[in-house]
Image (cartoon, rainbow, N blue to C red; front, side, top):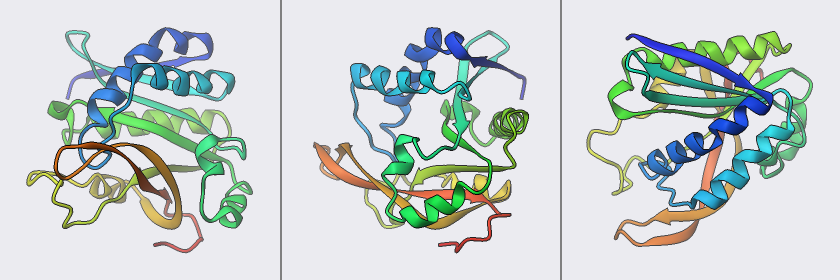
Length: 207
């Protein structure tokens, strides 16, 4: 698939925060996140990345220049907000003994999923991590039950993609409350669990 990926860092990310927040608001409404946020919250949340000089933003554009995918990553540190929410803090501390590059987001429009574009973006994230001294990679992802009635019939679990490229789910998780689409269509603040995935070189306990 013919796409071009451009990397942004430092203050250059600031100009693209609105685009990234729009992607999150649009596509995180989908299963499994079912998240309904606000633009104000999104921009405040994403601006926190700017304080970390290791943050890198990637935009994937098609041949017409339309943005079809976004990703953001940063070196893992004890100050990373999501890590502070972990249920297994002792195991998270063990992660600090290695140099992990954390994938904050990786989102594609539906037409570009499962067509090779994700592999390109993943390789760019890993390359950026290596350039900053990382030798490991990780991310958190929502995992809902297979019998969740909100699960679309044509849903393709991204776990298949990440397992294919050398990642495994661990027993480390975080819990977050956000406005969540319920089975009856209502939007209600609910607790959602995200699980840590790492590359298979990790010697910790898989889930």
